[in-house]
Image (cartoon, rainbow over all chains, first blue to last red):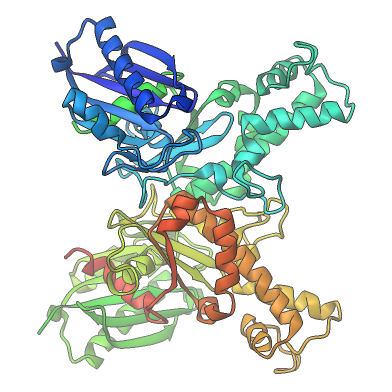
Length: 318
Length: 318
């Protein structure tokens, strides 16, 4: 029997837990609500329960596991395995999650930022294989990222490197959730696609975007659907999205000089709709030698990247 | 007798060559014009001549040197020691500068980007000591930078990491020398201070900026001088400079999560005039945990950073 690792992807609304083998394959997985309002002790108990459950589902015993990796929203103290606090885990303050889980399982436990865990997963088991300087960017309701530099996970001074979502790309841009103006995330996330669509609908622009689901709030995917049906307003919004994605990615290429960037998250599943326009902006705004060496691709790992990434925190030790 | 290294700072207009001891002290140095129009072979001969000369000035022989480090404008192939091409060295194409110099001296030769060399110098012998994730930013006619990550020089995939000058911070900003719009360098370099001043003078704003030197083109230092004398237009320009510097530095802190950033270059010598306003913007735009761990200081190494940085390419092997 090979080696197995447990990966826990702790989010503000759900906990995804899975058993991953050493080839990065998810054997069994489980998704439960976080119920963050019950407090950190209750959440940690639920994590433990989910670990027990996926072990059982996989017909494995604790001694088959070589460790437990946890991806969590930061800021964290990764050395001490502590969630310092988190916008997505309200009420959490200096929660020693790694030690609390270790108490029960007596296994190596690794905690890291969800973005850092994801890049490691995609690096070890996805499109990052063979890359030396690799960036993973997730474009979803927000924009997050992680980097592998010279073959090693780049954490930064306190594991908050690659907070690309809050990089200013337009000083006079719209307000971001962080309070700042013109952040990459405020201009190029899935949320900003929906926001632009809502604005155009409110302005009375003729569009089929909302026809699909009356009175429901606009979602980025409706915009993509409408664009696929040739809707002009939707196509205009996707072009704007492509432009801002291109600007942000260009900045990342100018600064990190990676050989590969993989895009994940919900918006990336529609990459065929904006890739060429996005790359046009990347080419226009990136220094030639940096652009020449960098490939931009869609990530290979899909929804399981949270679990595989968390497991990779242990698997990367090989 | 201790160990000595030769550092060569190759620029588009001048070559600075010096002998540096293992404590990072410049023993002797020399500055000669590059005369780039004479072609790469002629320039390399002049570099060799300058090396011979500083050795002689230092009363040292070749066998006292443990290597020669060269900082040059990129893009370079640092593994092969080649200048691929350079906007600052017109006509240079795939020049194997390291091998050509090695032919004469038979010593270890290291070539790297001038920004990368500078950060290494400031890291080993300046304010970077003790830092683990350190960034050096030079604010001069342009804006360049380099990073030391986990105690190691960060080169990127082809030694062009930290091209921060061409990071877009305002998509609708002014045109940059690189052809792009809204680059950090186009908004916050010394050149952009002078450009703003010229514009205000052309608009007929009342200012003492030009009184100092009639009919000469405005320089950033005149603006600082006028601001020190309470000139309102100059103070307004410095405030704008502080804002854009703050935006760019905030992006760098959000992305690299460094524990220290040192500012060098001509504009940094006036840091007392803009530090507090710049840091106000940094604080406003940087994620709290990233801001909390990062100190922003003025670099310790001054004009000699080019030579010391180049020498550090050899000295860092210890």
